[in-house]
Image (cartoon, rainbow, N blue to C red; front, side, top):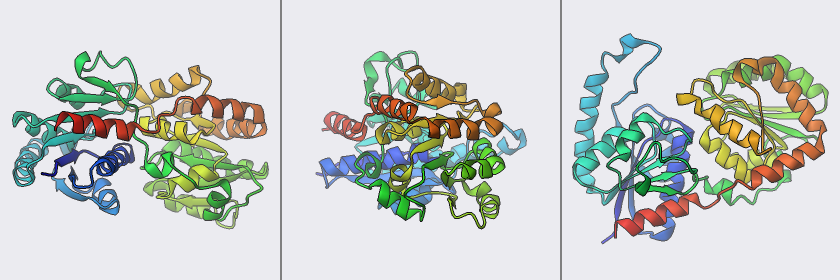
Length: 363
């Protein structure tokens, strides 16, 4: 009889795309596997998962709002409601295993699964584990992590170091630089900077580029700029009449963006780092300073210490990003050095490792 697996979580691309990569890897091993995603209503996964060809159920759940305590009044009711929804989903689907990829919708699903003695697996992408994953890790069957040293968060015997799953269209990309440049209607003879602030955009990166855009273009560079939804409109207005810039709120064809890019400006989320290692790109990281335990700064410093990336602090980004990028664009030796060193850290088959481990333990 074919196996049935629930994959729970989401909220940002950093959770959703690895989840889809794991689902695809499971399907490559056994096409008869039935997969159901569970996410949070109104979040990005409700759109991206069906686009990838999978069914998803949405929960009425929200995370704790740190900026407005009044908004948390309904939280206990939402939690109770989401547990009732999870109970119905699990009862109807009869999963053989549940995989949690992070994001607050994963918590009630894995918690319920553990109470029902269903094998549960966690994928923790960051070097600092999230609080809900740490709670769930105690009863999880296995915990998949990106790097060594996670024993301070999870029981040692449950940890499997797999790396972070990278979307297949990036890890197995055959897009050439010429094709990438053409996709964004840019000039093949110019060096291309790709600015990306994660799936939701990055305020400091957007503001730095907006302020210093002319300086970037005046030295002969061109730009692919993923702004996130909030900044898309002002960015589009700011680049009118400038042919050396492509602007969009979100890029579905990231393989084309990485292929076109000579230099990247990025947040330092775990998934962005995994992709940049595989794509072998010289990168300037601008870590998001409000990430839990400031883990993005930890992530970025780890690469800087290996001479595999450059970094600028978020509060210094406004006037430092563009001059640093111009300097890097002029220094071919530094670009090659960063490329080689970041490429050495790549793990291209994390999705396969996770899928094989899950299936081995639920036979």
